[in-house]
Image (cartoon, rainbow, N blue to C red; front, side, top):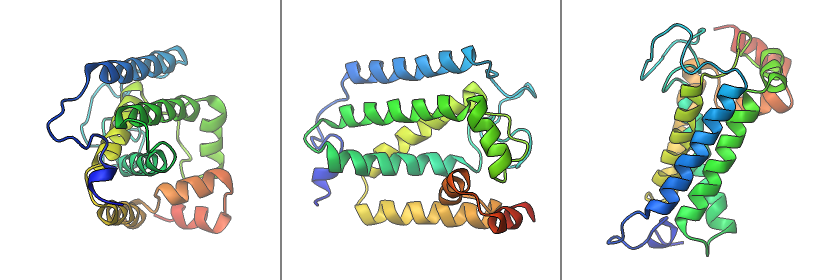
Length: 198
């Protein structure tokens, strides 16, 4: 597959269309409204907004970016690849909009009581209470950034970035997208013990 063919918009002289941007903003706004209706706090209950929150504490998943941000960028890589595979004939804006719908849906599901309880019992996130609305909206934005990055980089560079992100977070916080999914779906006690021994 050529680099030119995998770009969301292969015409370098074309400008972004305002229609798809407004639709995406409406989807993100609806997700934010849904999260507020579910009782999620707008920002961290600590009262501050960090662009980067490095600690794995009560402020995790409450700010703009944290150690789980690379997972959302990888979501974008994956959604781009799947969209390119299944919807190659559709415009990049349509594929990105569908990716935003899926990510927004995940943010709503992730912050439901059932999934929060699952995280608390099955993964290393023992004190997890859900995301702030700011963090969820930022996570959707990070996914979109990953989608757009994947559309502009050679495939092997995108794959290398994804592997690099997974290794970085594995070494730094003993968690990453792969382990997060594994522990959410089929928890393994040995991994949970290893993660908790930080």
